[in-house]
Image (cartoon, rainbow, N blue to C red):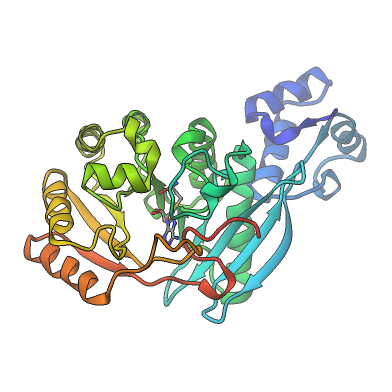
Length: 342
Ligand code: SAH
């Protein structure tokens, strides 16, 4: 089987050309075509001679992903089902707003975690995405944003399918490619990595000296409740999470965003609000209250809007910044927690 050329670094590409008797700078040219220009065939590399293109063809493939299906929501959100080289599917979403275009990208096919309220968790984890597969989702959405909304992509959130910190090495490579001038040149400050909260990996990410933002899907600051709705958290108690977040802040000086859904009879009580307020006070953080998107499970229903307002009021009284996030793309199952390649 021919090798995926994008698994090679720029230096490895240069070495390949030297071994084949070409000048090393050919490696740089090819790297530029592959990443900066994102071409999907050697035939399009027009500053290379035909024999050189044939050498590439004989040795490598370019595993570009294919958009299998596009759905457009009435609110402008666009959902892509993308087919990977081995036929598996993931989803990625373009979310346009007034001035922004945000790409919501997947990091895994399925997910190994078991959040009871999330459609992706029902799929189990099939495999990790390669760096180029993460990168291509961003490129695809950047092009869509230019085509449909006349502007380049402005933001990227790792809130699609999968747990980014469980595909750590490929996540880091993808972030470097996305932010590099040799890739897309999008600032790391415009990237949000969203995690369900894996303390050891949060510390590791803190040590990378990246400029990305961190969001944590908290959903409850009461241990027993969190364990129930996100069973894997039994291995990652709230105090360990707190330690890792304190470490994150110490290293990056970047505030953490807690993502939080309020459900009827799950966390719609004063006790839960107080627990959240206390948790937030322990670490520089803000709260994003997110609207629940039903996945058809009767155990999870949106709380009464009064309760959500009470959360907002009490957080604000305690000087904690809070935003309420409205769902986008619900009509096409493109909203948070609904990605499951139906
Ligand atoms: N695994 C990562 C990233 C993917 S989920 C994480 O958990 O952060 C992205 C966000 O969608 C998370 O905050 C998650 O808790 C939220 N989410 C999951 N299911 C949802 C649902 N049904 N409705 C609304 N948000 C949901």
